Image (cartoon, rainbow, N blue to C red; front, side):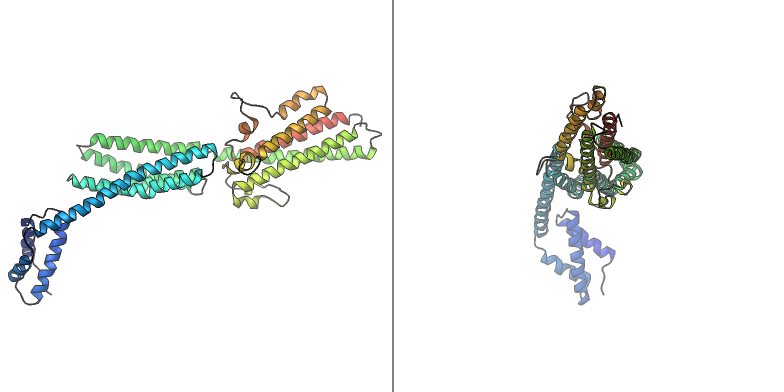
Length: 424
């Protein structure tokens, strides 16, 4: 098979340049086409110069320039479209994320969809398109393109945005993605960017600004880790909640034993036995209601937590996951999409039980009852009782509060029963 020598290829390249072709990519494509055409003719027995003359005659005057002009128009059109597309995505994606964040703060439906879609467009669409447009702009200025810098930047941005999205949505893998993004920034991206900035004397200010932005991005990344509820705190709240539930059960068992002994003697021996029995039944109902709420919160936090709740709403917190998520707390106690939130029913039940205790207890116990079963505005900002205790609170935090409420109810029941059954 006939092959052109480097000298013959150089002659073809010079002829193309004489025709006024300046677009490098088109030069290479046309040179390759002419080489193949001439080699085919040489296979038929023609010498190089004869084959070259035949191919050259087919190229009409200004034909190559017209091809170049048509190609540049097409390429520039695609480039302009890509740049316009980049601007559109760069506007839509952050807008969706901001809108989703606002919806999430207001607990409106659609927040998760907006945040997920906006982050996806930013990480998967905008970053690669931005890199391609930047590379094209750099080439048009006649500068050398540092592809490694752009590739590393796109990959780092993808992992960072993915990690933030997973963290917001409480999906597994958020910590890994954020950690990978930090490692990529420290180990690869910043060293490559610094090296590039030192070599590019003309754009040192621009490159310095980019470096500052990347460092700020790292700081935000670290703060995302810092704002996460500590595992030690979560574990501590879980243990405290378990302790409250066990203590409440112990107090209830002792109270039941005392009341059973009193029932044997009957109302003739104990004047306030009927009131004591009524208080015990009411305490049992409220205690059961609180336990059902806690089980519902655990399950609503994530479907995988079904294994942590027994048939009688027995909760095994050690088997429950997503303990730092507040999804179940909001859905059970604060959400009002379909009906009155359970939190309002809970507050009403606590208030009714408090009034019952106050009607049966001595004046000396009134302050204790008011404090332990307080449902009015709380804190320096005088927040509503529900918001103060449960807004933005993780699952274990809510269980800690509700189990503490169980213990308070059992403790106050015991104190009031002691007064009612004092003679006994």
